[in-house]
Length: 164
Length: 277
View 1 (cartoon, chains in turn blue, yellow):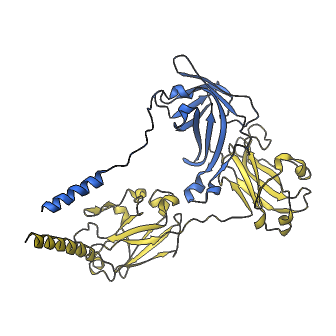
View 2 (tube, rainbow over the protein chains, first blue to last red):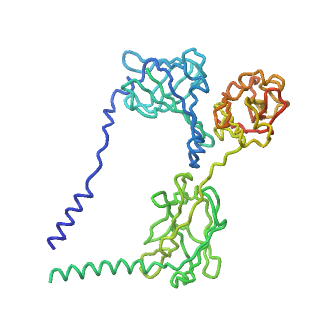
């Protein structure tokens, strides 16, 4: 009986072990890191239907950066002294527009832990992008994404990677 | 004496595990229509429980269905409770002669993508409330799910579906060209024209050409990039590619792959443009 209790105890120890997770850092002050002049370095277009069907990678995504001429795109996000989002500007380059209007204001869904950035034109037009990851933000890397919907389902996603 | 006791406990546990398994009928046979199917196909599952005496005596049979290590049938609100009562949505249809059926489309039943469903679906025909150990269920049975295979073709668009605000890339696979003469070309061009609707959604007569047929060979935006391995591509921004009148929208566009002079060409392709976003 003693042996059985001992075995159960050892098994309990083994199965109670948990893998260690990497430290993802403090989730504070992220909105402050969003302001500045961002240079677009990568645009990846994803065919969500091909992903859903499990098609090969080359049918799922393509890099649009060079082929669509995004290399020179710049996005300027301004904040006031209090750290609140104020104005934005798509710099006048030869790159295609992303937001659809080249200046206006921007807001965050949550100033402390922002996930969605909404760009608003002077005439009230809106465009939203999602912060896809905060990894790299403290090193001057901003990752945003936008998904185009059809009948409520994403059909195309654009992943944008900026650096300061 | 203590050792003897342990052995007896072990034997009893092993025996009871075997007994439970033995009380799940392993004699059921099944087939599907169609015989092979993908996660996007509607499939009718037929199960014959003639050789499962208890199940064959029942007036109702329920399907317990799952993706191994994946989702359950969320599309109908789940399987229910195995021992206390199945979901009524999973009641099977009596086809007579102890054959029962259930019709479903995997992506809809599991509310999951083909990639999430993978290559196998598990199922157990059972009594409404099973677990009595009297043969009121079958053993786990499995249906193979065919992969959705990407099939290369002479022409494709990336992405497959898009709106009038998206970037689109046309791909021409020279090795799969249906016109043998196209296989000899070192430069490939695209003749493209748009089909347009007005602000009321009515078709606008005439096509909007990106460039006239005679000028295609001299138009940079219609010159495909040789990506190697006989693959040619052309990327454009549908927001600006065609010169549309204010209020007009793209409903589709058509394109022909050709040589510079326009003397060798492919067939005409057409792609729909979504406008709901």
